Length: 318
Ligand SMILES: [Zn+2]
Image (cartoon, rainbow, N blue to C red):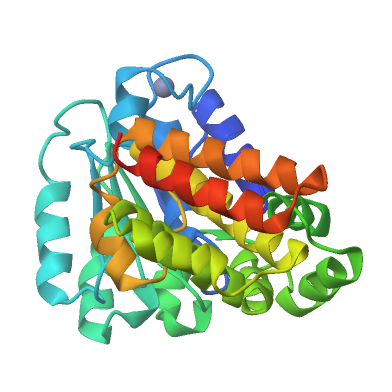
C-alpha cells in the first residue's frame, strides 16, 4: 500500500484545476497503483468543491466501479494492441457523464512496443477532455518516447508508522518484536508484511476458517468436535477467536460494499460465505467476542468452547 503524500498532492492540484493530461505512475508490485489511479480519477471527476468529496454522484459511481467515464485496460491480463486501439477509439468520443474521460493502462510496462507506439500519439496530445494514467512497476519498461511525455508520479510504500497501524488492526495481539521484524522485512509493503505475519498466524487462521465453514454449512457436530476435541489451551483458543473475529469482520465489511477486504483462504469457505446474512455474521461475531471475554475473565476453557459451539451454530441459521 502506498503512503498518502502523492494522493494528497494530486487532490490539491485537482481542486485548483492544475492537473496534467498524461501521467506515468510507478511503484513496486502490490503497492496499489491501480487504487491510486482510481482515487485520482475520482478527484478529477468529482463535482463538489473539495475533491474527491466521496458522496456526489460522480464519486459514488466511481467508488462502485460503475463510472462510465473511467476506462481501465490491462486489469486482469496484460493489455494487447486491440485494447489499446479500443482505448484510442474511445478517446475521440465525448464523455458520457461528465466533462472528462479517464483512461488507465494497468501494467503498461507489459505493453509490447507496437502497443506503446500506438498509445504514444494519444499520450503526446490527448484531447482536452482526456486524462491518461500509465501504471508500471518499472519506468525502464516503457519506451523513452513515452516516458518523456508523461508527468511522473512515484509511489512509495507506507511510512513505518502507517504500516504499523495497519498491522495492529489486522493482528491485534501482535508483539512489538514481531511487529518490528515485519516492518524490517516488508520495506513498507503491506502485502509482504501481511504474508510474513500470517505465516505465523496461519494455523489459527486455518482453524478459524474450518470452524466457520462447519457453522455456516450447519454441521453442528463438526463445530463442537473442532472446538472441543483438540482440548485447546486458553491462548490457543484465544488465537483462533482473534482470527475468527477478523474473518467475520472482513465478511461484514464486504457485505457493506467496502473494497479491499481480505477474502478467506479456504476454497470451501469462499464458496459458502456469500450465503450468510448480515445478521448471522453479526451474531457469530458477538458469540466470538463473548467467548473471548469469558476466557479473559478466566472462565473454564472447555465450558467457554462448548458455549461458543452452541452459539455459533444457532447464529449461523439466522
Ligand atoms: Zn465528489
